[in-house]
Amino acid sequence: MKLTRALALVFGLLAVAGPAFAQTYPERPITLVVPYPAGGGNDVLGRLVAERMGKALGGTIVVENRGGAGGTIGTRQVAKSAADGYTMLIATSSLAINPALYPNVGYDPIKDFAPIGLLASGANIVLVHPSVPANSIPELIALAKKDPGKLNFASTGSGSSVHLAAELFAAMAGIKINHVPYRGSGPALNDLLGGHVTMMFATLPSAIGIVKGGKVRALAVSGAQRSAAFPELPTIAEAGLPGYAAELHYGLVAPAGTPRPIIDRLNAALRAALEDPTLRERLAREGAVPLPSTPEEYAADIAAEERMWGKIVRDAGVKGE
Image 1 (cartoon, one colour):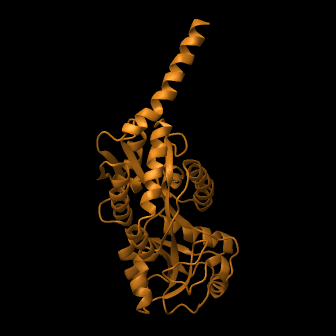
Image 2 (image 1 turned 90 degrees about the vertical axis):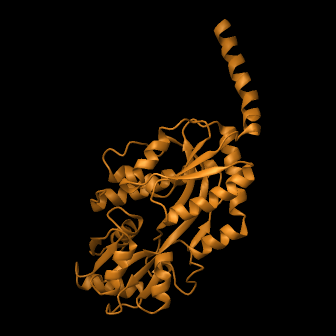
Image 3 (image 1 turned 30 degrees about the vertical axis):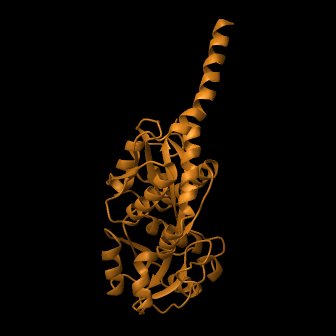
């Protein structure tokens, strides 16, 4: 009986202390880990969000780049950090994808993190070299079925979001296309321009210039909705492959066990940041769409992505580099 009363007292004190702790938080700078090198899309987005969330919180958020191993090094470090609200991770779909790619990734995307909220989604754009006799998704699929294995596609690396988007496309269309991995979008797009590869699922920001310049042919976008950057292009689903959708999701997570009042404060600050006109304009330029959400909605999204992309990785036999 005494033990039961003692436990009840402890839990009661915690319930009272939680909101009080959240009111004084943050008392020192918060670290936002970007698990990729400086200068990339994740880094730019992370810095924009950190600045605006810091203002909403009345504190400072410091961005720290911890790149390597496809984002797994920085992600693993955050998973092992103190669950005190002073360490966050800007995560992409790779949070859910990497455990299927790497045998010893060092974290569980469900158990080791407390989701804060979704940030945005970004689609890819399907590009073909002008020499490819296909002006639509149905024509591209018909061409691939006529000559199985003749078409090859570039990616930014084995297991990258653009690689897996193409693998999902091939699986749903019932076609065989050959993967040619590159180290980054620059080399991949250069070889597409040179005709060394025939097609590519490219990120929207990297493709805007060459599409507008007429150097490649754009057939569709990979998201569930049309892109504001290319409103004239249909989605792949609209163009002839019903049910197809492949988007890169961005979000913020903290180490598992971070107090819920702190998660709620961070979620509110993230939502406030996503209302900022400058941030929304920048997201639009990057071909991204704001996705404000609750922590529970982001948790469900991570679980859904782990199921979907894990199956694609296993079915295609993809291994991380």
